[in-house]
Image (cartoon, rainbow, N blue to C red):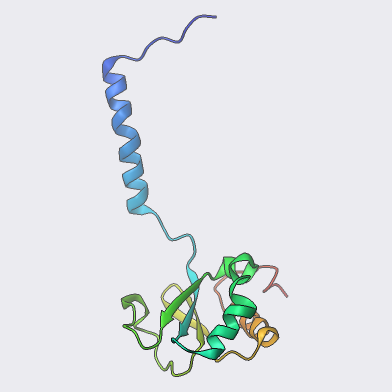
Length: 138
């Protein structure tokens, strides 16, 4: 077995620059992993929010729905994040707003219980553009 030839000094130098440059370019042009998210408006002391946390919160990220629209929590009484300024009319907690590509595509006001929540979310997910999953396929 013959050993591989050693790279020249120029090859080694250029190789050291390519990897970091590729990483920086990938980071600059990277797209979000998902274009949809489920925004949950909650408030400190909200008993219905606590019920949702107990009944759904722990399993939500492990579900098909949670993969399709990851949860993002926003305090109803706090400053609204800049990218969510378009969401208006949220009065009750919890309110779940399904967002895709910067637009509201569905809303669940209040928490009607675990069974109703999943059904209402399934209906809202049908509004996502071109997305069909096990939970939204007909």
